[in-house]
Length: 95
Image (cartoon, rainbow, N blue to C red):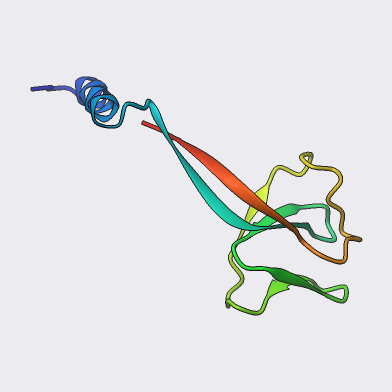
């Protein structure tokens, strides 16, 4: 049985790989991407709508759940767009 934190993590990784056959797990989230007026790119879990010059909001949820994405990614998504882009956010969870 492992005794130190480092040994425990190594043991847990080995067990995970034996059980799943993977070193990492992939999780996907369906949603929409839209850029706000300040240039920030956001991922929304519900379809947002653009409210005049106020920003992007979701009517299905309050408060609006969103994740900020690196600003320099996907320059084709612009504040001027009328609709958010439907997409899937993929997360790689490393063990």
